[in-house]
Length: 95
Image (tube, rainbow, N blue to C red; front, top):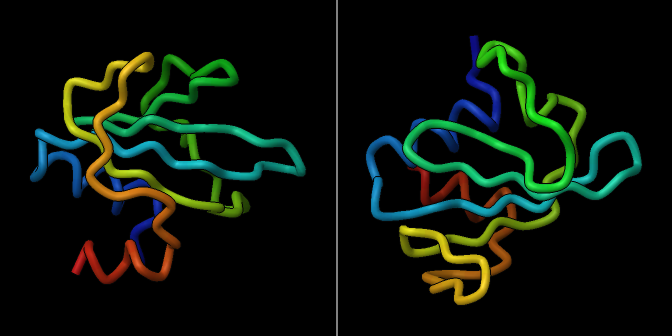
């Protein structure tokens, strides 16, 4: 079974703890931003379920772009490594 985009991104952050991923998505026609850090995902625009088995990034979500940032993430002063990565380009980074 193929891993979901969320699981792939979470796995990446487990092996790259110095990075935070900010994923811009569209979910059911609504914009959302999801932070992924050290294997955990959390929406910055909508409630995140307490149950870690409930995906934050549903399979139906459209990934609009991904930013790689230095950890710790400081919203007022983000330190970008790379911005606006497409899902196809991120798959190459993921290897």
